[in-house]
Amino acid sequence: MNKQVVWVVAVIAVLVLGVGSGLTAALLVGGDDGGDDDRDRGATSAPPATSSQGPVGAVPAGLEEFYGQQLAWEGCGANQCATLTVPLAYAEPGGETIGIALERTLARDPDNRVGSLVVNPGGPGAPGTTMAENADGYFTSTLLDRVDVVAFDPRGTGDSAPVDCLSDADLDAFVAQDPTPDDAGERQEFVASEEEFFAGCVAGSDGVAAHVSTVEAARDMDVLRSVLGEEQLSYLGFSYGTTLGSTYAELFPENVGRFVLDGATDPTLDFRDNALSQAAGFQTALDAYVDDCVAGDDCFLGASREEALATISDLFASVEESPLPTDLDRDLQIGNAFYGVAYPLYSRESWFLLDDGLQEALDGNGTTLLALSDLYGSRNASGGYDDNSLEAFYAINCLDDPTSASAEEVPAEYPAFDQASPTFGRFFAWGLAGCVGIQDEAAEPTPTIRAAGAAPIVVVGTTRDPATPYEEAVALAEQLESGVLLTRDGDGHTGYNKGNSCIDDAVEGYLLDGDVPADDTRC
Image (cartoon, rainbow, N blue to C red):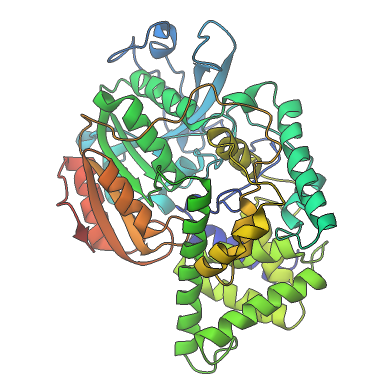
């Protein structure tokens, strides 16, 4: 990898800290083939510790042993790490168990500590422990001074019984494949690829792939609450982390403490409406990007929004026909080109990288877009994957909702998706077939979300969020009995710690001092 590509990857890795999930059955932050974790769990300045001496709060029948376990915290770098033991299947608490990887950074001002704050970065599939490893990128010093940030890899991800579905080479091909098959032969290959993926999940994951649902992960969070010694759970979740958080609130409303759900998802959307929503969200973000270019002098994409969008669409068509050479070990395929363009839209601060990638591609070189696609999938310079977030993304999403259109049905959806997003619509339309071939069935149905009786739940929405459109935050706040809507007027994914002091003050005022912001506060 040349020096420019290394620089691009390093810069965008910093810029996207804190973002969560992406396209349904299409885009997320992170990706993996179940590679080993290379974190140092050795020397640390933080002392080893154990947690609660017994269950705290209500304990579901048969789970007393899990709720009352002690954690052996050990040093890992500047933080502490431990493993939480939970049942693989909650209906069989006496059966097989799995370990949930935990990492925490202790409050920096212990005299003013208010308790533990459990966090989740999104995905689904992203290993949450990265939030403790990179705490200064996710949270302000105001928050880090007063809470123990407790991060975890949800079941099936990271170091928590990770699902493994494809070899590294097959995962490369899975990401690079044409996401908009045009003829019968390409559609047959698309379906075969999806079926191979899910067969691999079953074969390579020792039964775990059938137990990575959001409901089960939420149950793990309640075990964690008790083991941390907390009567109520304080929680900050981003993107898919809002799905996880709202599910927890429905299952355990009496255990909800200070909850903030940032970059919210609408749990009432079915798989088609969710795909349409995200297609529109990414189009809104792309429109904002090209408008910014056109507003400057001599935009390389064109003199108007229409011209600029046509340039990008023509580039996609060209790459689909003839992959671009790169300075890396592979050509830029159409699947990589899509992810390379979509990924930088998560953050306005990374738009300049999209400038570089598009200008370079228009000149016939796909290096930067391929590097961005690799970063999306957590593919490293050696050709392996740093985590399994891409595989876990599909496994979790499709276990939660296995609904899928057939390859023959998708083209009929083109008009609706083209209207939602002239640029990305058909990429998202084919996401409707993304769960074809799933072999597992969730142990519990996904509940209707109301969280009746829960403490106030602050829902944060950003007006031009590409991955979780603002309208979804409005909807979730309305559905939650105690929902409080907090609006950030801005670009990019999620609102907290994105340079808006009004949002930061409101979020931290609630998490630290219990000050509930006024409903429909706009920043």
